[in-house]
Length: 83
Image 1 (tube, rainbow, N blue to C red):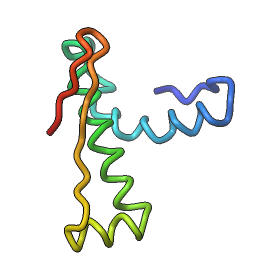
Image 2 (image 1 turned 60 degrees about the vertical axis):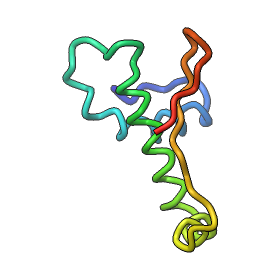
Image 3 (image 1 turned 180 degrees about the horizontal axis):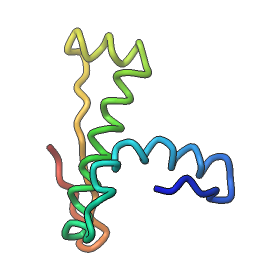
């Protein structure tokens, strides 16, 4: 969250995308259980970014040809949750 270099331009770009989605959690002392709240924040942000950044996807969502769904994979039990 402090903006330090992660070692590669690709990792820095990923971190730059995630950072604003997790800003609300910056002042929280303890992460949520299995960091699920933080994960959902990022997942929903990625789904919104797809629609915002791609005219093709935005148009397909607008005409209901496709639907973007958020999903969260749990490393602990291998389950996928969808919202």
